[in-house]
Length: 287
Image 1 (tube, helix red, strand yellow):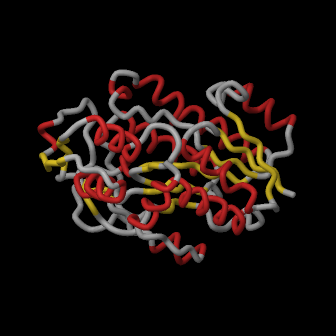
Image 2: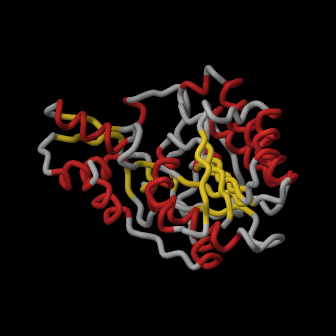
């Protein structure tokens, strides 16, 4: 049985991995969060890897407060770059496969066709810059590293757009939601399934399969479209109006277009990607 370290285990993706772990009996999972393992502490990471026999690490830990990162640059880079470096070095030293989660924020969002893994990156925020440096560092330490970029993550866990919209729709008669940012939602449980499917194929294939991959659910929509679907599928009656992003200025610049081309991950790992609305329906049943 192979031991897999899951960092950031109390976040959305970490909890989604816990939910489906039983479907992967070939793996034994070590779940950690800050209290069990401070990944920003290089010595703590090295000690942890020395004391445990770890065959793979999926790093779900990250600084994800996009707007706060603009004023907390040091902390964002500590978690999204330095901690990634420590984990990548430890995985390299102990021959463990490393999977790093990254983001659509590494792009400037100025394209109008889906982003491929070969497209030039151009982060426009501290958050995006810190995640970009983390993925580049991990790949620089070991080309076997697998980086999976995702976008618009939501689930029944933690704080996210779907849960917040439902709360607001139950409290308010009307809401304004931006319609000039396009992307694709990603159900965290779908992403968790992909991560473990990828790991199942990659863990015994050293020297192959490393690199950057894109994953989200299928389809394209705006945040406004997403809010309408959440309302209608939840049987709520809130009046939702489309507005432009300038009506809601934020410290961090959001990509206007965050659609991924997922052909590489589908062809490499034989993955079928669910349509976003089907996955939303599954998530809503858990709320």
